[in-house]
Length: 218
Image 1 (cartoon, helix red, strand yellow):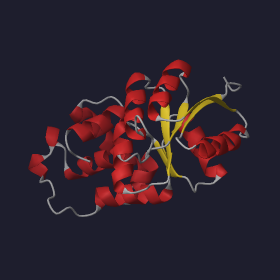
Image 2 (cartoon, helix red, strand yellow):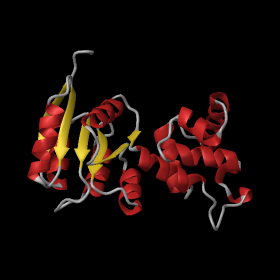
Image 3 (cartoon, rainbow, N blue to C red):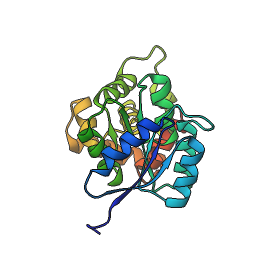
Image 4 (cartoon, helix red, strand yellow):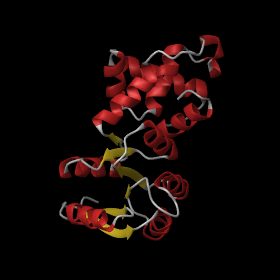
């Protein structure tokens, strides 16, 4: 198991970017590039054929954009993780990509070390977000909203704190990151998560993310 390489597909419509990423990623020990795609359609087909561990996905591509390609791959191949690697970090790019199922998000000025950490994190089943992107997500979740949902309107009798915890899970934060954001202990976060799971009937974090989006809690 330790000898198994992380299998990667690179999807970007610019050949110079694809070749540069291939050169960079190809130098990382334990990682194997199994395909290169010039658009979203090719990325989907390569993913279906090669079943990679991680797809490095650009967002702005012809034929099928990165968001829709991400949505399709995640629906067809739940074990394949998507690492968005894009020039854009605006809300109109970030949130649709995460909603489509991306669990990593870096901008193209990321260092080789950052890209390697992100690939390994996603291959291990974790999330990895650019720090600026993570701050944007946290701000979107915890800053005061003009129309804040009243406790009585929350689904399945969730308390405001449980709903906030669910929002942070949907934003891709780990238990430790949630604890730091809310300035509480890890055990308190675990208690809230257990209550959220019990009340909503979800079994894991992936189902919790889906629940949050379906009930408008993001």
